[in-house]
Image 1: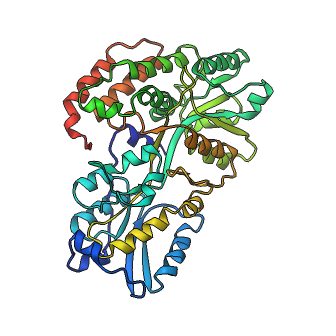
Image 2: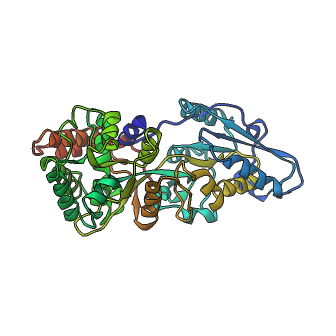
Image 3: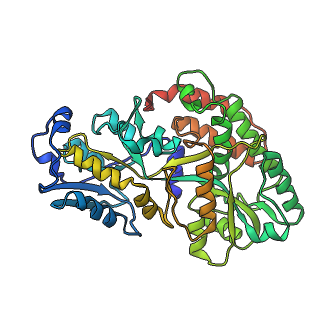
Length: 428
């Protein structure tokens, strides 16, 4: 979890995989030739899939059973990779021509640029994805895969405290500030933070910045690349000011800078704070520690009651451009992305990247998050298309604010760093 969010602020994910693909052992026809091959349902063949996803609900078995209703002589070889090195293994397999027919990955733009992936723009499921997922799996205007699930950010709150104080979830930023002030007056920390673990600061900043950056301009970070906007402009400055509203009004727990993620989460469970701004793994973490905590969720609104939710795709899936069975691989992929199959995959585990998937969750807060993702527009994580050096300057600015100071030249420094290093980015 911590490594994941640190990776978010670092822009790129490093991904790779290992093994031998059935498809790569024979001469490979061109895409056009492969597409024209007859789709025989009575022949024996093997499709290999590499993945690292946890399957707690029988998702892969259900997909295979459905696939074999059409292709009874098919063999699906499910090769599970180690989560610690799946990225390296995947990349090595692609470079050596030994990659699977279908590969789970996190690096679609880079792989598409290298010519490793099949163009899937004509597939019906492409329009079902949320917007942030569509952006992540596209390159040069074409779709090269799908995102299965996302992680998002917002406000988790202690329902017991809210009920006791007769508090309502806020509809605007001003209402959120008023709510926080009322909680503070009652002697309770409005927001629990664990900023000794630096990555947790992003749990507060990202839901603020998503609306500030992307509400008026969904292409803000792409426009930054072409020089139309600056980091030191109204969008990021607005987000910084809102972050300062929370820090300078004393809405974080007094020891927020001295404790880390684990301690802060325990304080939240113990009722020492009313809210925690964090990622969508929070309900699962809380459930692993106690069965008695009543938790809700709301998306963080701006001053006009508008919200854009940062929703970062996690597990993604593509088809190898060299597969000998493109038609069959596309059908298998369509089953992996079927609405009911994804509901099974996501049950009590993940938030789907598809708008029409309604998964079951035992924790009511997860249901709240799912509803919010379907209600509000989504974006990539703020900073996802920044350079590492620009994100470092953003983090310095946030730490400056937490220390009780006003911003100096941190955002100007972010712009300088971005221009210096933007050649390292891979954009459409």
